[in-house]
Length: 456
Ligand SMILES: [Zn+2]
Image 1 (cartoon, protein in one colour):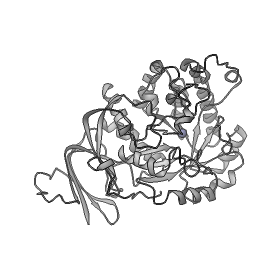
Image 2: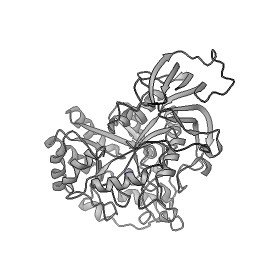
Image 3: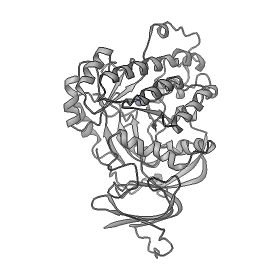
Image 4: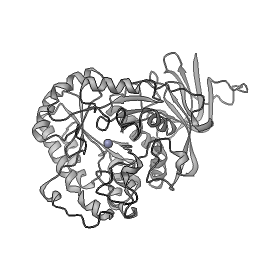
């Protein structure tokens, strides 16, 4: 049984612009078995509405996106997000695989037993494929090898307090112990490090965004990244990855480390590329995240660094909480839970902002799909429309504009700084391993479908 998808604008590997092509997916294996150049929609009679033939016409056919940084928070905090709603939001945004963070579920993913618990709660709930990062916390070095064997795709650690008791930050000596246990696997850093001067900052007006921003200066990131590159020189076989880079002043350190040949990669997030501190109203805690969203000039430097390859990829860091935890009435940035919710909006965000900057679509897909698949160790099966890869693809219309409202949000707690913003580009259909995972023509986008995502 085959699924055939044909279109005049199919984004194939190694091209910045889409071209006419036809893709055949074997529905028994879910794999792409044939890619033919040329559009056949005008030659095939499809009046019967064959479920196994999709004519995308002029709409774009893109590889399914891979979001390597998502907090689904289940088990334990499934009232914040959860597998069902989080993966529906992903599917509605053309994300066909995501990697869940270990930190804010309970238990956190810091032992193989805890990973089992997480997998158990995910089963049957996933609309897209889901993989898992493990957690590196003080004294769990002995768990790292078994976590990898149990399927963790790498590890996340924090150099700054997380606010979560079960997930403490690591010290330099913890890190040395961890890195000596990790050969050729990925260690992801929340790269902010508190120093003496940052801890003496006094908040005068907790509603002021400017003051919140001053409490998380760029030096916190610069200091952390300096430590990471210094340790990496001592443990060169560990692949280090900087999560959610915000501070442009850390870019020279990263450039120098990459020039020295260190195995270092870097992600930034939609919110650092599409939002600016100057536009954030005081008290608007839906914008609170750490590291913080910085000034417009910083944002331009992040775009430059993406284009020149210093930054490798872009992820959501979708990190929701109960709306009450944002304390919107008080608008206290210091008290509010940190995290920006954006799962499902990423492609429209980067396309809207990238177009203004002359970024070709192929480049955006490299940052959101090819490079993130590489980071998660999935480049053999995901991230590109390629023979032998999973049949993960998105039918997408780049032209229509829409104003973000709650009806576009599929995640559980519908609070996002993007509400009210006008974006461009709409997902029509999302296929995971050749199976329909979202269709904008269906009621709620999902009516009549079943979750068919697999655990990676
Ligand atoms: Zn995160």
